[in-house]
Structures are given as structure tokens and as C-alpha cells.
Image 1: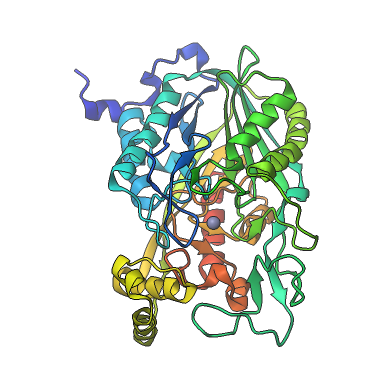
Image 2: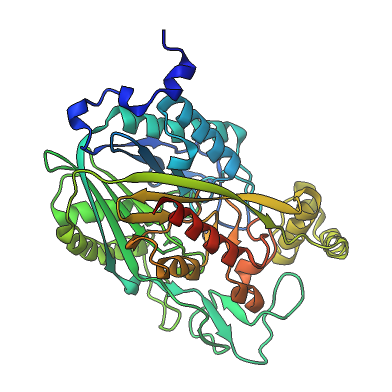
Length: 475
Ligand SMILES: [Zn+2]
């Protein structure tokens, strides 16, 4: 009798794929709805934004590949950020049910800012019942994809579309004093400086214009899954208090429409590359008024033709190497000093009594003082973060455990460990913003110490080195 334990340990050859198919890739893709009930706290802002409406449903989207000896799973979730505990428990369920080990399973949040909190971010707190539901649905998406495994072909390519991308951090003029919530006045860069700001010089960093596309299609010629890869934080411009997956699903819908391919049975998923300092707003020009969701439509209309061009040029393969590798990296935490915590408590004492009673603040100084107190009270000196590499043939996928500055993706690509590299951020952990060392020196929102920015100043080079190590381990 095969015990459960034996099933998990059984070689993959014991699966239902026939021996004659040994050098044939199999693929399956599926979605699982992860929309919360109304009333959920939406992440992505500094205050508690409660869901009153749903514009479009949220999903966990899974792609599973099986080459006869190894399997990999990529699961992208319409969420702002998913912490390690949730991803680890979803991966444990997946490993128990499907034989795919955690090292070969990539789970990442897309970074919709109109999705519920899966971790305590600023003043948005997740509902424990939603966390449980989300964990099960992430695992379900992989199980459903495995149930749909069928003979497939795969290919990928990278296009170029810089027009939807802007580095949102700008250098400010020498002598100009930027305000910050800690009263330091030392920042020399400013996020989202506003249109026509006379105090800014130029963007403080690059963009990464690569537009990646992975195509998986059945032997009937119909696509099974399309996965994009693009370094755009999110688009936004959605209705207030409204649940939406942002531009990520609209990208796939628009691409299929432009390609004249029926969406029936096709899973489209957009992975977020390193884009912590990138958005779609051009502050060098006057603003253009857009209706809600207008900017999302416009962005996707811009990306679709280039994706279609890449798609038409892709050479499909019947079989590819598949591998995965993951490591834990111990990174320091920028903990507040005792004096920082004392000062923060004083500021909180000055907040309106109603806000103190509700532990919900509206003034930025108070919001960050609350962050300082929480970090001082709850955060350890170091955090173990996960860094992963996946291999799909000659395509390498390195991951970053947070909102990585676009420079990190560029740094990994430059080493050319694989001919094609598609980085995925907010993967396997959520450890806040990952600015470059230079970005930390410049200061600005992404570096302000909070639950959404706490890793050590040297985190970026250490994470780039770890991502390269994971890719080299499977190259
Ligand atoms: Zn963000």
C-alpha cells in the first residue's frame, strides 16, 4: 500500500504521464478567486481604506510545468503584498498535495494597491479569516493547474516598451529642504514630486524597459498560459474604496483581444519585475485627466502591440530543463533607537485623542511615529528572507522579497547568467521596499523606516548577489 509519505517521496516517473511522453513538456494553468468580502481593509495607502465595491475580481493564477523529471509552479496573486508565513504555509500545502517542493514553487504578489492587506501595512490590518482563505486558494490554484496538465510547447521573448515607465523619484535642487515624517530635513530625492514642481531637477534613477513574455501552448495550438514580465509598480487610478486587480489582468485581456485569440481557457498573468521606484506618471509634462481605470486601459493598449510582436517571433520548444533553488538570507533590520521610540511616543501623545483611542492617525508624522513604535516593540534585529531562482530552459527567473528598486533587476540581468532573465519582485516573502544603497543615501518615501521599509541599507547588493547565486546554482 502506498502511504501518503511514500506518495510524496515517490519518483516523478510514477505519475500518470506515459513513458512515451518522457521528453514532452506538460503544462497546466488555473485561477482561483481570492476576492475578499466587502469591508476588507485595502492595502496600498497609509490609512485604513475599507472595500465598499468590487470593480473586478481578484485571483491567484498558477502555471505548472512538468518535463517528466521536474516540476515548477509559478503562482501570481492579485494582492498588494503577501508575507512569508502565508506563502510558506501555502507552499507546504502544495508540496504535500502535488510533490512540488518549495524550492520549485514561486509565489508572488502582483502589487495591486486596491487589494486587501495580507499583512499589517501602515494602518491596514488583514482579517485572519481572509488570510486562511487566501492560503488555501493559493494552494488550490496550483492543484487545479496540475489537474489540467497536458502536452504543451513553451517559448519566451523580451520586447522593449519604455513609454509606460517613469522613475518616480526625483532629485531636488541643492539647498531645497524636503520634509520627512521624522523632522530630519536631509532627503535629497522626492517621490512623486507633483507636476511642474520648480524644486526638482530630474529623475533620480533609471527605468527597465524590458517587456517579457512567456508563452505556453497546447499541442492543439491554443494558448494555455501567457505570462508577462514588466517593471511597473502598479497603475492605479481606480475607484475609491473599490477592489480591483489593477492593470495586471487587463494586460492579458487586451493582448488576447489584439491578437484575435479567444480568452476561453487561457490563463494570462502579469509578473511584476523590479519596480519599487517606478510608476506610470510623467511629471515632466502637464497632467492629463483620466476617468477611473482610464490609465489602466491606456497602459495596456500601449503594451499589447509590443507583446504581440514578441509573441509572433517566439520559437516554441517541446521540452525544456526545469529547476528551482531557494536560499534564506539573514538581513539586518534598521531598528529605531530608544531615543527614536521616545520621540515617536511624544509625537503620538500630541495626536488628537480620538485618533489615539482608535490607533488610527491621519497626520503623516503620527502615522510614521506609530510605525516607529511598532518596529521598536515587535521587530527582530535580523530577518530571514527568501531568495529564489527558477529555470525554464534558457530563461532564468530570480526573485526579490519586496518592492525592489528597478536597479536590482538591471544588475542581475547585466550578469547574463541566463540569456533571458525575468526578475519577479514581492516573491516568497514581503520585506518592504528594497532601495539601492544610493537610494538610502538620497532618502525619500521608500527609505522612510516603517513596516514597509526596514531592511538594512546594504540589503540591495546582498539580495542581488543571492539572486545571482541561485541562478548560477541551476544554470
Ligand atoms: Zn507599493
